[in-house]
Length: 160
Ligand SMILES: Cc1cc2nc3c(=O)[nH]c(=O)nc-3n(C[C@H](O)[C@H](O)[C@H](O)COP(=O)(O)OP(=O)(O)OC[C@H]3O[C@@H](n4cnc5c(N)ncnc54)[C@H](O)[C@@H]3O)c2cc1C
Image 1 (cartoon, helix red, strand yellow):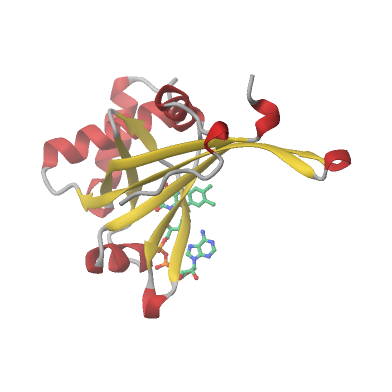
Image 2 (cartoon, protein in one colour):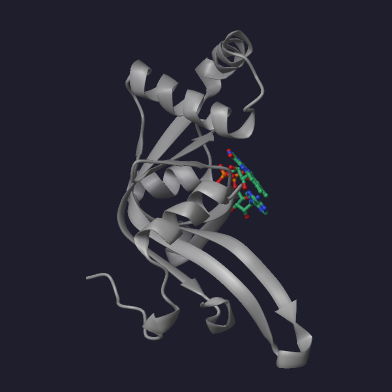
């Protein structure tokens, strides 16, 4: 059911898509929001083995939306270089589709939190990281998006 890219000469391969997800520091999670309005919310994330992990509070608009409908998409923009003289931008982006679930089990929640911390605070030692996770544990919600479909696209000028 997922669509093919119309301009598929601009498509990125799986490895290139994954490299974009690994480089990115945030993306925009799109969910089915209130009253038929899509809700697109920027979030930090970490990508690992065809899953994306997010942290958030235990309530709010996105969680209400995901409780009604776990289907989501997530977009990461890798590059957007404006080239005024060509009326274009040299862009590269990835869009992922999948379903999101809350990690309820302690071990999986901890591992996801650890993975996120390692991405964003790579210099932190294990003890500091564990303390930080423990401090936020009770109020922390960890989400997992399982990738069902992933596409990447870049400006044709970036194609080699
Ligand atoms: C680069 C970046 C990274 C972020 N990383 C994280 C993260 O890893 N975890 C996390 O929990 N939050 C993160 N945030 C904040 C995030 O975008 C949301 O504000 C937050 O997750 C609360 O979402 P919610 O749906 O529960 O908000 P709610 O407060 O329930 O949303 C209610 C309404 O507030 C408005 N709103 C909410 N968030 C935003 C926003 N960011 N900008 C404008 N209007 C908004 C919308 O109109 C929304 O309908 C990040 C923000 C940015 C810009």
